[in-house]
Amino acid sequence: MTLAHDVAGDGPSTVLLLHSGVCDRRMWDAQFHALADAGHRVVRCDLRGFGDTPIDGPHVHADDIRELLDHLGVERAAIVGSSFGGEVALEFTVRHPGRTTALALLCAAAPGHEAGPELRAFFVREDALLEDGDIAAAAALNADLWLGPDADAGARDLVLRMQTRAFELQLPAPDEFDPGEVEVTDADLAAITVPVLVATGAHDLPDFRTIGDRIAGLFPDVRRAELDWAGHLPALERPEETTKLLLDFLPASVSHS
Image (tube, rainbow, N blue to C red):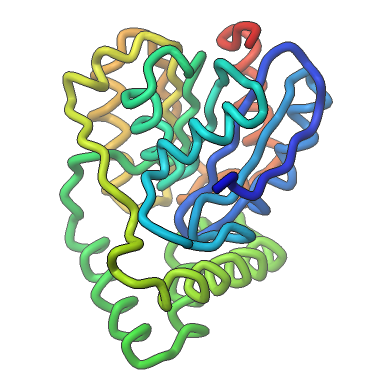
């Protein structure tokens, strides 16, 4: 399957945007065209089970990304990953060496992290709401938790719609269609030599600052940014500021692809 995607710009470098687990490619509306206007070829996609990409069989997200880049004729790309998308970006970079030119990880999840008490409590509450069939309440729970204090009503409405869509696609899917796991060790991450930006939000759950500190310490070429205004989804909370963060990082990091 070719993931649902959009392409903008015709610059010599490609930037791939990977959405968070409560969003789909619509979360990048502000950054998509701004990065293209800055001279990049920009690709955003819906992973399987999100947005316009259904779940039609067993799959590995990192391999779906490789197939999308192959379909587009892109040999190498800089990858911007938000939350779950950041974890997929790391898995792709390890599983398909030489295809990544830079990594920008925004409040990223990471392989091997054990959830803290707040995150575990959230999962318990979400599971209970979904078992009761209350998708609207589960979506609202996600919007309340993941959006920081600077998110406006439009951002909240978009998260509600994106998360609801993800539930509609994922809940009916049989267990055998669950995404396959990619084993990634700290040694694998330490072998990533491309430039990496690791950004976290001061208003996010502690888990993600812990992850940010841990993985930033593994990369040989890393820039660490703590966003004092951000929750978990900075691209939606302060779109222009997040775009500037990415533009400041990417020009020095992205080679032609």
